[in-house]
Image 1 (cartoon, each protein chain N blue to C red):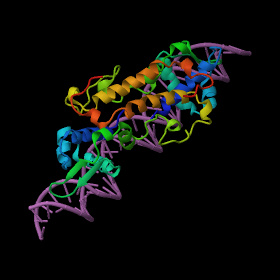
Image 2 (image 1 turned 90 degrees about the horizontal axis):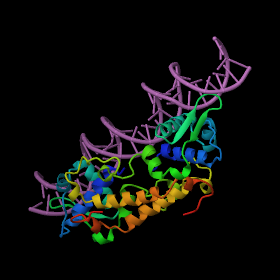
Image 3 (image 1 turned 180 degrees about the vertical axis):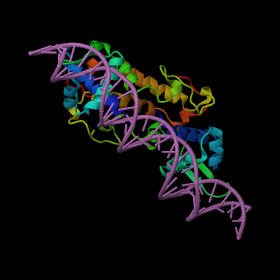
Image 4 (image 1 turned 135 degrees about the horizontal axis):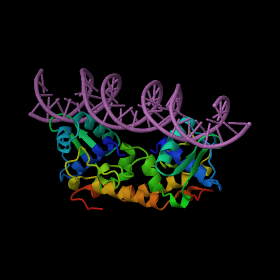
Length: 141
Length: 141
DNA sequence: GTTTATCCTACTAAATCTATAGGATAATAG
DNA sequence: CTATTATCCTATAGATTTAGTAGGATAAAC
């Protein structure tokens, strides 16, 4: 299941991407518009800023804004920052590789191959989808 | 991330599928061979039996055994029973549909289309993989 | 009737997710 | 300079899910 954190983060990003202008938007405005707890959203936007997706400005007239073109923000990057590894098991993860603690040997693991296929299928989707693709009237399916 | 429950369930299923004979195998043997807590595995095999994947026999010489050919057990079925919905959000789930509580309208939801694509990509993999495909030396990638 | 192994419910512990509290910091306006 | 505004940041609390355990009931074999 997609975490609320990721869901809210994606909604906030699309909210910002939809705007023509890149003027700062306050957390409160995004939170209200997208039905998100303001404090929770605050922490999410903070991670998005720390990971290079957003800029911010303090004080009156402050808020958050995109610092890249939506076309240049692939879903792979967003998902990895908000949701974590794209792979379902660490031993097939490209960016978060780890040995599975219960597996003596990847070469004989019965689910390794399946997990590889799943990872690749998801990567294919995320790599071919940018924030720009999420904006506007949805292209159904 | 894949839950331990699903991972262990899949390993147990492949362990049983690898055997030529369909004689009952004891939980203890599977648990030891696959590095799984016996009690935990017990509850997993129980759900697999209740959902029509396994048969069981009590008493001496008892245990669990497959009641279908591995070719006839698609990953879609196993995943849905052990891991739950294949979709990442309930509003795009085929078998577990629900409205998202925070979304006023699916038609304007910015992530709906992406979640559909992800679901379909995963379905494609799971539908085209049976338990039989998990057996034996892994076909890498 | 004893042994063996699954059946079943309930429960506990740990981890993760979701959300909140409350003050620190910095920018703006006057 | 001071008040106001809005982000910054750490810590923590509450809720949910996951992982694993306890302990006896049931049924089959010998």
